[in-house]
Every structure is written in C-alpha cells, then in structure tokens.
Length: 392
Image (cartoon, rainbow, N blue to C red):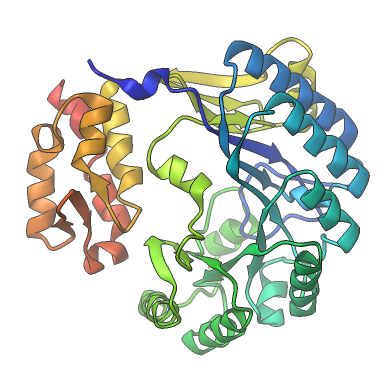
C-alpha cells in the first residue's frame, strides 16, 4: 500500500501546559489548578520528553508550534523564558514563516510576560475570551471580565503581536441570540485577524454535566442555538472573514496553519501531560497526571498508550477531519497518501451524502454544503468504520 505520510517527519509540534488558575464549569481538558503544583519540575520533565522524542524521531524544519492547556500563560516570565528556550533547543530548525501559537487567558498576560513570549519566538496568541457578557462569564466559571480582555489585547499589541485570535462560545446557559449578537459586535470592534467560535458541549466529568444530569442547567433551545450559529456565520462573512473551517473565521492569510495540520491528517509531535501525537503512523497519548507524567519522564517516554493506525482508519480520519475545512477534501491528496481514488473507497457514501444535499462536488473533490455545515457531525459519522467494513 502506498502511504507516503507514514514516513513523513512531523513539521508540527503540540506542547501541553496543564496548569490553570481555576477549573471552568464546562472544561474536560487535562488541566489542574496551579496552586501548589510543581511547575519547574514539570518544565524539566518536558525537556526530558523533548530530548527523548527528538532522539527517536529527529525533527526537520518546523512549520508550526502550538502551546495549549490548561493556560500556558500562568507561567511566570522567568518560567516562560526557560520553557521557550527549551523548545528552541530541541526543535531548532524553524521555518522562516513559522507560526508559533500560544493559548492565553485574559488577565494572565501582563506586558513583561508577553515580551518574554515574543522574545522566545511566539508570534500568534489565541485568547480564551468566550463572551463579552460579564454575567455569562461568571456563570461558566471564567475568572476574567471584559476589562481584562481589552487590557490583555492592548498589552499584546504593545509587545509587538499582530496575529491575534479570540475564542467565543455560543449555546451557553442564559445566552440569547441578542446577547450573542452583542458579544459579536464587541468582538468585531477589536478588528482581529481571526475568530474561533464554538458551541457549548456538555462533557462528562464537568460541573455542567452534573448540573445537566440534575436538570439544573438551563441551556438555550436547539432552535435558538441554530439561530445564533447562522447569525454568527452571516455577520462574520459580511465583515470580510472567511469561514475556512466549521468553527474558524479569518481574514485572508490568517488561517491557523497548525490546526490545518490536524485537518489534513498530517503527522505532529505531541508533548506534555495528556498530549496526543501522531508520528510515523502511530498515535500516542501521554500519561495525564502531573506527578505521574514527571515521574514517567525519568524512565523514558511518558506514554499512556500507543496505537498503530491502519490504512483503513487513516482513510476514515482523512475524510472526517478533512471535511471540517470548508474547501473540503481533494481527490489528489487522498491518492497521494493512499494510492487509491476517493471514489474507489467511499464512492457509495459520497453519492448518498451528495444526494441528501449535505456534500457537494468541487473541481478537486468534495466539501460540505451549507446544510452540511450545520449537520457536520452527522456527515463525519457516515465515514466511521466504513473503510474497515470493506476490508480494503
């Protein structure tokens, strides 16, 4: 089987900083409240993991780095400097056009810290804003307010950052379409190059899930949530933002290149507690707990599990993540990775989904229709297990 991407050395790096100032009510990410955590021990453990990882799979030119969490910006300026110097030491060969993103929470980014980030090579910041309604922010467990957002963005610009993004959420408890519109008006007034907009998912092991189970979480009706999403898409489009992925909107040239690595099913290094990686056809998940992760790095790689991805699974992944991008999937990319035509593997389901008006043909392949964008999960689910069943 022709699988070029199996030999591909990752050009993308994901690094997880698992510390937060507090745990938000909707969050099921691998994150821990900062107080009393062994932060420097964790950064030393990260260095050990980076050293072992690049020994096993030496990196080539790095195109994108993404530091997520948790809240990476809870690191103090000296800790930030140590961390970023380590990244550069183990992944030294950066593309001239590298995209180096760090997630940040408003209120955890003073000017000194932002300058340390900029000096360490970070050139893109994604702020977790979620809403411009202080009541809603309090209701979802965020500890920042809208003043913190404005101050953080002002400091980021002072430190020399121009590639800035904010996350917003819709479908929150107590949120109405009008409140969402007000938030969007305030967000657009910032004139940022990128916005990510997500609907609330009630995940297990969160406070919101507990409240939902008890019938105490008053979420907007499905119709109101759909109204919010349609209004968001329309408004951002009218302001000149391209919806290049279901949840992401950008001015031309400011699309997230790191996330596109995932959506194109490319390899990437995954480092840190609970991080996922995909290298040479193997997916891995790291040990999640902070101290267990630190201890594991003293003995080798801190792996929780590894899984060899079969050709069939890789084909399904290609479709499920690739169709998230509004330009869709290209037949030529599929053929390059797998040596088969898209239609020879998925012809039946592609025909069915086009017939239902959820997908449409492009000159190069297939993409979601406007109806398909609203029913994305239904579309992606159609590919799950399909290649495996056909025993290609």
